[in-house]
Image (cartoon, rainbow, N blue to C red; front, side):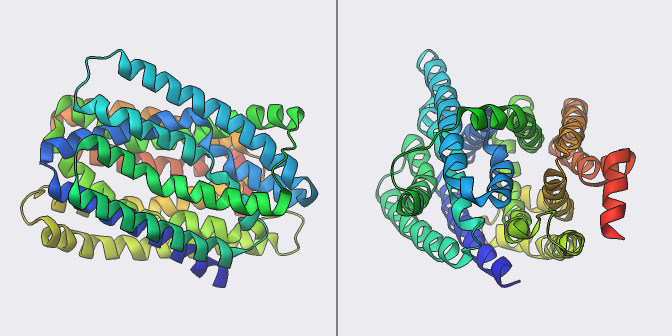
Length: 402
């Protein structure tokens, strides 16, 4: 529980400051321009799946199972992830430079560098797997705090969509530098790349990255549909609601981080740890969902009055996603520990198909509410329904939870 509180403090401080910056941006930009920025953000997040950001759980699992190979694992993963993410960003820049320009592409080029820096955040695994949660949390909070102050000072004096996109990258860049310092302090600068592990990571990690990417896609594809079918103003209202929901969803990863070192199948208390992870995360998910339902509309009204009026109603429905996301994230962590990445892939692929089909048909009929219904149904399928239908996951979870 102590580790959970430290991880939660770091993550919530990080997201809170990023969110404050985002809420301030929404306040100073016109709704249409904020809608364009939200469109760019959705595109970059979807493209980030190709940089294998979803393999961090595999890396952490391998370090826990073989601590003596930590340097080799991290060096090899760094080589793989940096190479792939660089190629993705290079492709985005080439496409943007050959386009007709406009606000969208002015923000897209600098924002795309977030793909590289986010892919390298896995370096923090050396702290997480060593259970050094105090250092991870305290230094993380300090770095993000300094970055926040710098961004607010700059944006208060100058603001345009390109500069805003550049500033959004700051937090992640500074965190990567911090984690790299801890890595160099422990292992030095000389890398220890193992090509066989690179192959293993690509082989196993590609399935998991694609699987995780499917979750990202079905949490962002709705925004692409809204932008194309309804326009940037409607997207701006929807994005504000999503930003508030994300504040509450963030805690789902906190439990995973706190339990990382305890989800080792060789430990005597493994079943007990799994049961504690799932039930406690579900409890907090329901609790935070109720808090969001009550508090989020009030905060939106306080911050923006009637500027994003519709978002106050959207956030009420979207609060149902919060407990489902907690269950989704933490059961996924257990499935990774059990090497059931194939189950995760099928689960997420099914949810993605459902989400795209529902968005395509429901948005033209019900507008933004169609996207909300599609999101809730997709989360329900991936977090619960598929796990009941699939024999492997059902048998496993019933055995672990009894």
